[in-house]
Length: 90
Image (cartoon, rainbow, N blue to C red; front, side):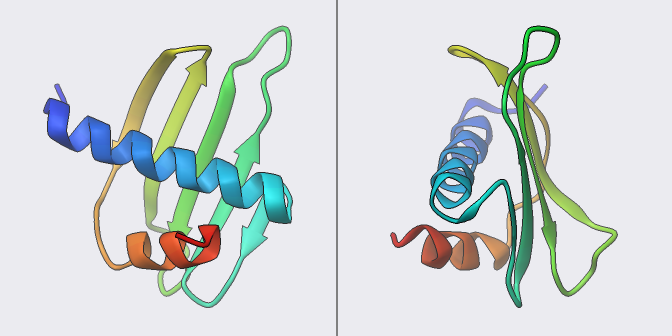
């Protein structure tokens, strides 16, 4: 089970990824990260995946949610978080 502090940080990163997706499109890529956002439909929840660009095989964030119910599937903190903040204008 994920500790509350880590889950809170992961959800904050999810929120920033959604800001980037809304501003720049559901698929975003720069020199540091790649974001894929999936909007909810009738049969699936929202979802966001982030990979480090320096290692395309390492997914650093995966979150799915519907309304206020969110599940952090995976989260690996690291330098990509600074890149995400820059991309979101924070």
